[in-house]
Length: 353
Image 1: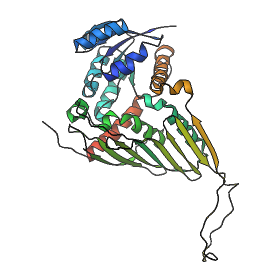
Image 2: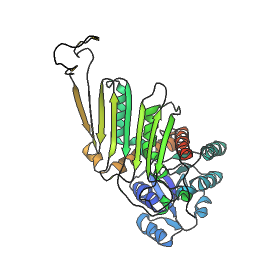
Image 3: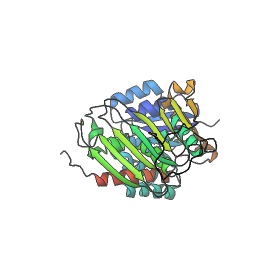
Image 4: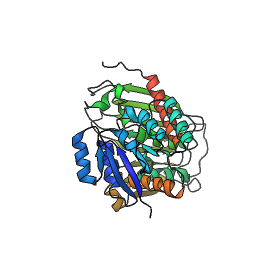
């Protein structure tokens, strides 16, 4: 088995707690070098991963012994540093958000093509087990025509770190948003058409100048209406999905998915009546529901986050070693950037100096 040599830029929450912690357990990968401007993080990386560690990421770019570089730098540096990585001749995996603007996403995609290097975007939430199961049920057709989907990624939090600042590409949409927005767009149309968007931002408990409450509605001809919330001012946290269909519906939360539907052939036969119904009656029937449910397998439920990383990095390994195809493609990430850019266009916010 070929072992891929990896460099990681950044040892903050993403670089360490997501990428390094996972890669240290996967025998298909070897962490060779870490870069972080903070000396204490470099020292910790040497102790934890047994790798080299440097404070200047450009030293990593000069190396010729790496199969891929993970760009887990702060959000506002994703685009410029990814450009540097590609120009240096490396394959790159960039953390979300991929970019703030479509023009930047297009520039990175074009540069990767010119350099003949892999450009991958870390959107592991496409592999969330409950999302995949919900998508499977929706696409099976048992729920009928999908009328509306509600997705909520809500909680209550007051934040005062750099991810609350517009100048750092902060805010709930760019920070948390790529996860649920990516799922929204996959359910809206896997063929990458753009939805019509209505979006509203608010600043509630943030100490910065970026939004901490997002409400968005996505529509399109022949498509379901999708209602999305990403809020940090919900005292009764909601994180899940509801699906409305012409023959039934679905809900998921936590590690549980349940859905119910009816077969039109077994439903009571009805016809339109234009005259008043007899007696003090009401138009009511009992639909013969078929009810089903599914739970994330116990071994996966213990650490769903690690499972999503495992599936993502498994696909990445297949691409780099066996010339497989990316499950999360740059065009998918580009559409996501276009949607988030439109949401920001509709909600210009004042900035703190």
